Image 1 (cartoon, one colour):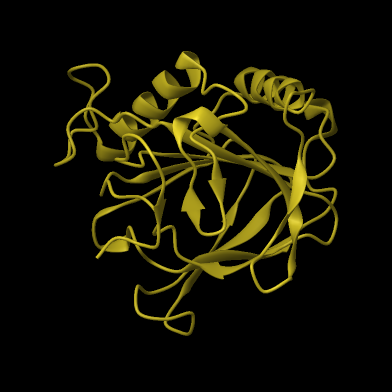
Image 2 (cartoon, rainbow, N blue to C red):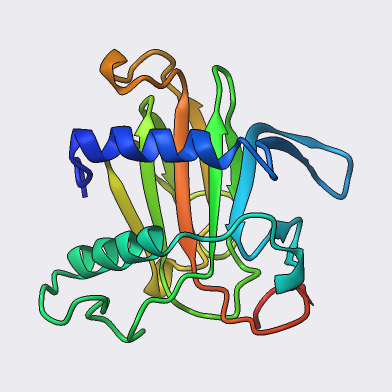
Length: 210
């Protein structure tokens, strides 16, 4: 949904993302089990994700704000085209109750390889908000990292929701157009906020849903 976030709301979210990084967590380059280091810098709100599992609630470093949960519900309701009962997605998932948000910061040259969001037990859609520089978002298939895929450009304020048959599709960001954002936004680079419903209660759950 292009331009879903009004410009002033974008500015508010940029300011909030800066505040999130002031502690007790910080934006960090994630180190993968094989030793690779991701070029994006990330932090988690609510349920904390590490490759490739979620930690228990006692490991949370930053809370997931209620206002961000509500924003995710509004986004899902608009994406499904339902404007009736507030807070519902209008689809088969009932009340969207995200308990984790991953905030990724793409500096100049950063990218994201093709991957699946598959550590969640819930089938609820993923809600993705873009801020700052425009990127190429690659949405692939659910079988492997190869073709077929579809490339779309996501600009600041755009909303992307993927669920249903696309929920486990491989996806990535092969390119970010540095300097493409409106300077008035006050952000050099790209921020991406993804809200997810893990479906987990206590403890940890390594691996993926079957």
